[in-house]
Image (cartoon, rainbow, N blue to C red; front, side):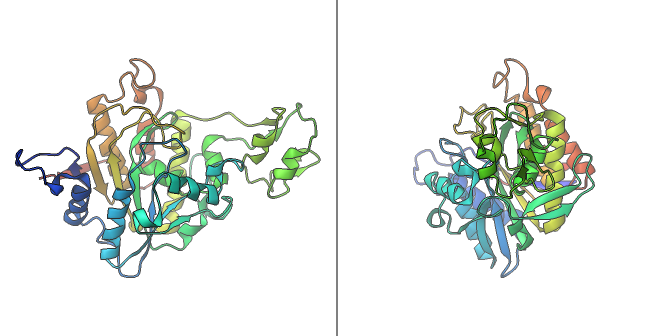
Length: 366
């Protein structure tokens, strides 16, 4: 069984008459969690350490606060590491979140800067999201994963995840943060759809898709799939609904593909070079990639830390199930694990050797 360390987010007031109790802050508790668990002690002097998190989109208000990232940064520096905070671009070419420049701009608007986090921001898949390394995997669905190029050069990865629900995969935990957040555009597309884009009979040959295609993959108004990077830029600029994409996957199908992409990232970096923090706070019923944040569906729980990605997510999922946290969240009385397949992320990740479902929790809140 893997070790999962936990700290409660509740302020357990020792002396009600004393207002100055900084030890009650979740920031202080996070620092205690790191130091008492030893989860970052695998970091060595001069290690280049990527801190993978999610900056959200414009309008998102419940992403992880930068002060939590800064605390992790400071602890990495205390161990001699050289940290940077990283994210990848989104699918598409026209929206700000789809390029490195726009991604950084949104991050800064949402409070993530070198000053607030004490570490620089690096967009791992390059300016447009086409910088990647091909990594073979033996998955049920995917055989090659396009891992963001920056992860080829890092020594360690620390995953700082806002654990919440996800409308397609059920949960957005560390597996999703690595499997979706550490791959480039072609693999992001492969997660969401099994078929490459096609030009259909609605095409008027206006040429907008030809102009935007970054690799000249559109020849005589047909897509050359040997060139296509599946960025969806053509779909964005087409006004005639002439780009067919689909089917869009959900449930077990998308969960398996997320896990296979995470496997590719592990193969490149090394499974032994990861640590995971799941923040079970501000538990929204959707991903932080939405341009808004709904009300939390449950009270804050705390922070879970582990060197095992499967155990970390399994522990948080089990907590949500015990709380029945999502009742009425999205589909009336139906629970999210009844219409999505979050358990598949856990079971398939264990099957592919990413970690183990069995865990023992060590509560260090006191």
